[in-house]
Length: 326
Image (tube, rainbow, N blue to C red; front, top):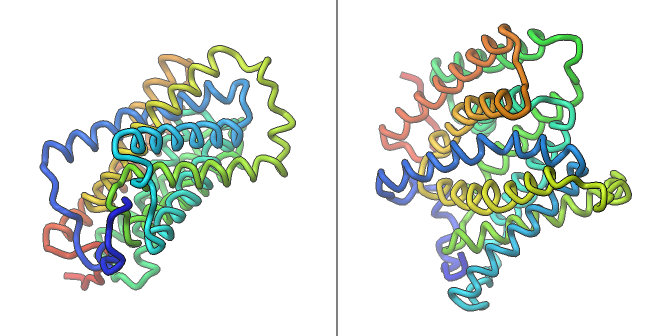
């Protein structure tokens, strides 16, 4: 991320993703599918005795420091420097995705099961498309159907639950997906550093620092009692930091630069299957039959949107290019 020339600043916004081997793309998508599917379970276990924003800030600060330390050890400290024009993209991803998006998810998961949280997050590609439509893109009819179907599915998820559902927790998780969608869109369109690992490390540090500061007025640092944190929560936190954050987020940011955003966003409807199964196996969580049906509606709607956007890419339209309906 540090050796690019300033003259290349507009490239991500006007050209398609750089070519990548299909096997590498499949491996990257598979890693994000599996690793981030387990994030919801890890969050729930870590939050048993760790405050949500403190947990989130700590794991991203530690992960960012680890990523940058590895890069510096392999390529020298000079590799960590970024040209000034690369910082907006790094900060957009760090503050929106790493910071606000992940922190809001953790806050919401205090009150929402891992399976239900994963189904709410599955709507993220719908918000990505909504953002692009707000930028002037003309949607195809099938995409409109997908968005409306997804929103109906989200409403059903809430209405199909029981009286114990925590509406504020659900709203917080939905807000996290909207923020994450905005961060993903900006990260793809703004100029990127040459070394994606350096950018990922700085994104983690920026987002982690922002959440750490936000945790002070929220009173979370005063609530933290290290001696009272269980070994189970520490194991979950370490897994989140090393596997889900260092590996998962690094692969995700790599994919953002090498694949259409709507294809990368397919993780949002694969992760719930893994998350629901893990929640049932480890935490004995259960979804109602109506919630499962509502989840299927959400996932089918997202799949429709992704399919429409994939056809758009095959027609040779780069991300952000206005399209006319057939």
